[in-house]
Length: 516
Image 1 (cartoon, rainbow, N blue to C red):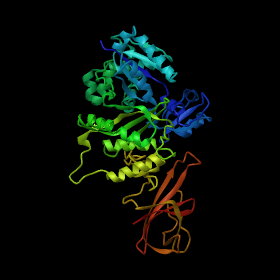
Image 2: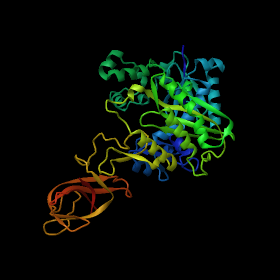
Image 3: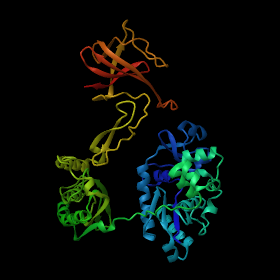
Image 4: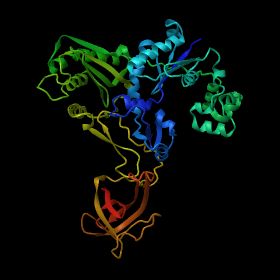
C-alpha cells in the first residue's frame, strides 16, 4: 500500500512576512494579522489567543486585540518563501506535491523504508527544515493526502501523527465537517444537522451525488477516508538546466556574455526539442569567492539565445561601476547557470497571421532600462476593477503577466458606467459647480442633489452645463476613520462639447478625468 506524508507549517503567511526578508521587523510573539479585501486572511497564534479569527473585518479584529499589527496579505510572497522548503524536502523525498504555501505532500513508502519507518522519515525532514530556519513544522501520515493533512494538524511541533493503514475513516469520523474547506457545502450540512465527517460519511453515496453534485461526492469520499485523486508530485526540470564554468574566472562583463552564447543556444535548443518555449528564466552568476547573484527574468513572448546573452550582460552591469567591470557581483565570475522558471507549449505563443506580441526592439530597450534602473522602473498599465478611474489602474512591471490588482468582474457598487474616460488627472484638479442661483451644488447624505448643476468650471471661468448625469455616491472604508471616503461623482458636458468626470467630497469639487 502506498502511504502519504503531509508536511504542515502553521501560520505560514505570517511566517513568510516576518521571516523571509519582507522588511518587517517585529518583536517575537507580536499579534499579527494579514488582511485581504478588508478581512483577516491569516493571523498569528498570539492574535488568535486574543480572539482574532480568519474572515473577521479589520474593525472587529482590532476591537478584540488593540495591539494587533495589521499587514497586507501577499500570496506571491507565500509562494516564494515556501520554495526553499520544497527544495529541501525534494533533497530527501523526490516528487513533492505542493498543496498550498506552507503545506505539501510526499509519497513516504520509499523514504519510510530507507530511513527505517514513517516516523523516522518525518524526523529526518524535521531536522532538515529546522536547519533551514523553519522551527514549527508538523507531519501526518495516512493512506491518502486528506487524512494525512488532518493528522498533521493534530501533531505537536516537530512531531508526527501516524494513521495506521486502513483506518483513515475511523480517524476522520469525529472531525467537524468544517475541515472539508467548502464553505457552502459545510453550511448546508450543518443546517441539515450533519456536523461531523462520520455523520456525512454515513449517507448513501448515490444520494450524496444526486443532492450535492460531483464536488459533494468527492467530499463524501474524503470523509470516508477514500482519496482517489491522482498524486501530482512536481518534477523540477533539472534536465533542462544548463551551466558553463570558466577556468580561469572572467573579470570582464563582455567576456562573460560572449562566453555564455553557446550554452544559451544549448539551453534554448533543449527546450525547443520538446516543442516548448521558455517565458521565464533564472540566471545564476557564481563568483570565485563563493558568492551567487541570481535574478528571474521574464519575457512577453519567449527567450532565444540572444535574449539570454543580453540578460547575462545586463545582470552583470546592473550596478554602477567601472566600464566593463563585473560590478553586480564584485568578483570574477566562475560560472553562469540557466534555470527555466516557466515553460509553455510553443503553440501557445505562436504568432498570428499578421504577427503578435511586443516589438522585439521595444522589448530589448525596455528590458535594458529595467535592468539598470530596477524592476519597477518600466511598467505597463492594466485596467482592472474599481469605482474611480485611478482605482482601476494597475501598473505592472515590464515583462510580468498583465494581471490587474483588482478583478474587473462585477459587482462594484458606485462604479461608473461605460465608456471609461480617456484622461485621468493625478492629482485631481480643482473645480466648481453651481446652480442656477449661483449657490454651490452639494450632495446630501442620502445622495440627493441640493440643486441642478447649471454652470461649472475647471481651473477657469464658469461655463453653462449642456448635460449632466449623476450622482454616483460612494461610501468606502466607513469602518476606518483615517481612510474613510464619502463622495459622489457626476458626468458633466459643457456647451463647448467637453465632457468631464467630477467628484464632490466634504463640500469640495474636483475633476478626476476627462472624456476625449
